Image (cartoon, rainbow, N blue to C red):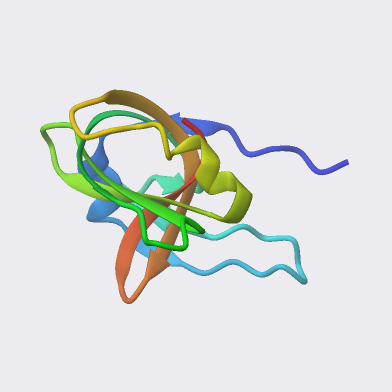
Length: 114
């Protein structure tokens, strides 16, 4: 049985300014980010306010931009996972559990539980 990596409580600036390292599915090594404090983070537990929402016409993807007064970051969900983000609106305060990911040299959070 594979042990689940605990979600680290942190502020958004720790993630958005972190250096990202891609994991390996073959070796069962998760992707992670190294913060400016040298801490390795794969999963996060954040509390933030939604400041922007993007829902394309096909509704197969949702992106929320969230802010916690230290910085802002995008929270994304795809396919069936996007359903949990659809009812959330701008101005809502939310708790996010998710994985740290990177696209085009920008860190984001892939939502697991919101």
